[in-house]
Amino acid sequence: MSTIVNQKQIQDKSRTDDVNVIFNGDRVATVEVTSGKSGDTYRVQITKTGDRQGAICNCNWGLHRPHGENAQRSACHHVIAAYNAINEKPVYAWKTEADADRQKKAKLFIGDGTWITIG
Ligand SMILES: [Zn+2]
Image 1: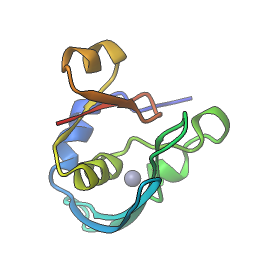
Image 2: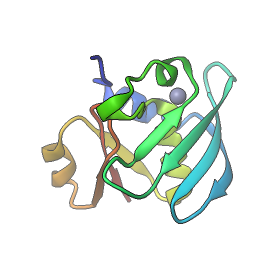
Image 3: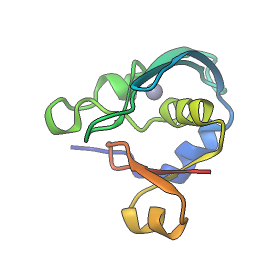
């Protein structure tokens, strides 16, 4: 099962995306993300509660995320851009929990082999 491995590239790419927060509630959020590169718009749906927090995205990568344990979660750059938008703070992406811990910030495993830290 392939997962994201180039977290820093994904993070950098996310900074060029345009975001439009459609809904940002306590449990879920929906964000439209327009790719800075292709100009295509995708829909990111974030789950904020439970033990499988993360987001699904209808981009090509996101549509092919496995079901089951991973719950179709995607860590594509659209998702990172969406987390940025709803947190109003920069979000950073990491490959390991140890990398995330070193930041001494709030951390979250969002599936697809990716940790994020916020702020
Ligand atoms: Zn995506």
